Image (cartoon, rainbow over all chains, first blue to last red; front, top):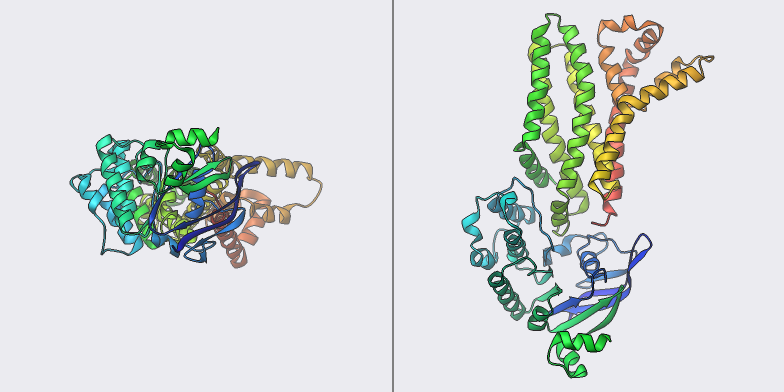
Length: 235
Length: 255
């Protein structure tokens, strides 16, 4: 399969702390990759580097064969759901969606499934600062999927969502995968990664400890559950 | 860029702080003009008040807004928009709102009560001062990651311009009192936008003659066409240089 994102010898330090040390990996279209790792392993930094929010110290990232340094056009193809989404306080939900459409200049072929599933359209007149953390999370999710991007990057997508909403999101993620999209998910909830992911990447201290398909991982360790398999391979 | 500016301005206009700022400025100006028949005196009083409040509110509000909107900036950076457009959009949006508040609060009363060259100079310098201090606010915001530190640095800049600078000039004058310093002093004022604004306004008034020898010298330089041009250019430098620097830093900044 064709690699849509290629990461070559990516390095990043914050002060003296080396967060990413020579990370090399490729992500291909059509599949869900679970990015795992303990706190401060470099997961969010890796994601933010792909989005151009963190500028790497060394190495390069190619999106569709082109380097992303000093470019922003490629972000049209990415939907990003941040860990904590915060938006202008006085803005209403409806205004926020309108603004994002306006900023992207895209008004058609929108994916409004999640807006409908979460009943956000009924809350269009609510100001963002009155929303609970979970509702904001729903807004973030709906925004990430809105423009039908071929790549989705979800940072801890279900943290803060109630179980029912989390299920809706998981179903949506599987639907999008079926359309041949690449979906990157970071999560600490192993069950969720176990359910969704095709491949698992484990980051440890800024290095890729392993990056293989879920099936391979389970076969190698002889375990049926991801949690058990991880404990076995890491010990 | 203009789209971002539009959304930010609309967001700020709805906030209570900016409305309070407009009303405060308007109340000060109207009451000063009502209290005294002499328009010139009124303009001097307004200048004194304006030179303290305008930079302070501009720098603190812009820094606070910048940091409060940092998650929004992250959201924008993840969208297909260049970083230059994001920062310039923010600058345009914030400055349009604060400048609008200034023009409503000070500009309108001055135009109504004291339409003169001095009045117009006051409005122009006040506007430039607003832009200068929003630029400085942006510089301190991109330099610092932490909101408290950012606001601290912004306040230090204001402190420097309003209080510390005068102290430094006095120390300098005292230390080198054996030398002729008048021309040097003119150059030194360029290092403080508030002083530049003060001189520019006061020299439009006749009271400059009361400021003694230095006043006469100032009148000679700053009263001339070259002097006014010099002052305006220096104010523009104070507005554009920090903005340019913050753009350079923002392009390479990790969010």
